[in-house]
Image (cartoon, rainbow, N blue to C red; front, side, top):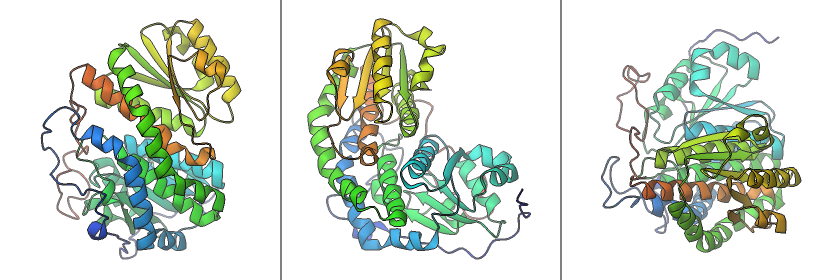
Length: 403
């Protein structure tokens, strides 16, 4: 078993940065500080959701112009294990990226909540064997992530990468490298377009390691295809969620789609204060099926590998009386028959290039449910843009900013 050295002082901080001064006019910068009240419910959230294909296109152009991905690919290694760390949506994004890197690129990667690394650092590092650690925080101010970054500073063999959408944050001062996507930030509380923009950026970083022209070309087409899909489907999803009332929301998925399901449940919980649960698709049969009924909406993310088995499961769910939503690239007659809401992506490319679009239905669903319940998805109750606790790490290193 590898012996991990004690925590010692790290080399001086080196930072890669690409600021938003050269943003194309088509990508709006953040215009008002966090906490600004929206004129009407979802006045920020809905435009941010609908702007995603445009943000993706701008992200691709900015990354090419900056050379950021080439710099990161020359600094980090696809052969050494990666560890992604985050909280909330950033944690599910971490697991999603790690899962798709493992599935599509065979790059060793996994993700953990920041608290796991914070309270058991040597156990976690020894188990995973990672010396490349990505710390994700949209605001760059999340307390647990900052504490982990501060803790890791003293380990001289580690390289840490801060991923944030904030122009200046404590997190970047605590990491050896920084990757910023300021143009993707939201004014609303909940992560939507920043989630998919960071996802696509790391998909492209993975492609720098493996050099797959087919997958790269598929991502190039995604902004155009995503816009066409939104134009055809956004209204349908919002109308369904705005009319039908459910007591419970269930999200099911396998492999990479499981982490999309986790993020989807969080979106619905955050935006609409609704109760949502997540299971691996076929695990729903083993106990959780007891909740299935007319007051339950079950969303099933259909994957290429498990399409046949998940179609069988869908039929069973309908027989139990549950309402069903199906998200699939191409629907079969059976999927059409057994779904109350059918969301067909119709991208016809590799599954690798569909994940960002697959995330959007939950954004629309959560917004519509929240509005139907008289809530404001821009500013969900009990939530802030960053979870900042008193006595946080970083306070001794740098002055804290508001999230």
